[in-house]
Length: 172
Length: 172
Image (cartoon, rainbow over all chains, first blue to last red):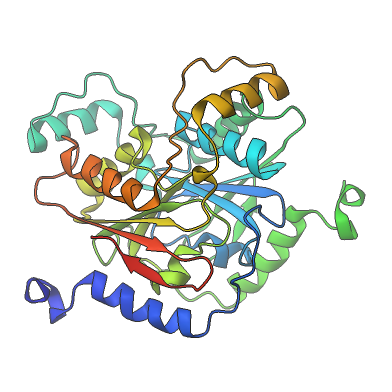
């Protein structure tokens, strides 16, 4: 299997090597399940956005939900309701970012691509792309605030992360 | 607002302070949008699972999707199809973990709690809890492999992360 990979080593093998080093220095085995800072971060899956590092989040401090775009999808709301009802979080921080892939396509274009490449008809499925970065953060803040599954009074704040500079800009 | 917080400082203020330090040392502004290692990691939102650190993932290397349980939900499949079709990833690595909140409730129990605490009737909505950790990883590997939205031949591998030891165990 390894010979299939560039450089001869599978990513799994690399993860396991890296993790052995992590585990050798690990000292957080007593952390409790509920997040210490009672907060959840919802961010894009982008490879350049290492959420805990960018925000300086300590181990055990915050839930971290990520998906394409960092959108307040139905599934993100599933995660938020579990986080709030079972594990006591009270804040949601939403992070989108510059140079996001979600700015580069429409549902119609992706549907055509999926049909051509995978032979699957996705109909009018919404893949949650957005044409305006600032507005998408505002939209997702509103979706979370207005969801009946989210506790009234939950603090919901939004940001744009600049992949070019490493800086976080507050939207709200 | 700050006076509402333990210690007098809001989490947003802390994030911004931490980020200013991160940005001051930032040197990755030229990283491209597509993940360098052509892989996506799907993991639980748990606060004790800092995915990039646990796996030794470099900035820009892998997409990272996270939700309650690290489940192969419909929304996770949305993220995977975007990752594969638009940004060229070819592997999926799924990580669940010990002491997971998803092992502690049933859909029925959570529905009752939501009704009592928020006054919302969620009907028979599936919040994707699981009673068996090993099996949940196998189930999600299968869901990804069998999805028509996932490219045939995609390498899908699964792991259990031990929050007590920092170690990653291979499931498949």
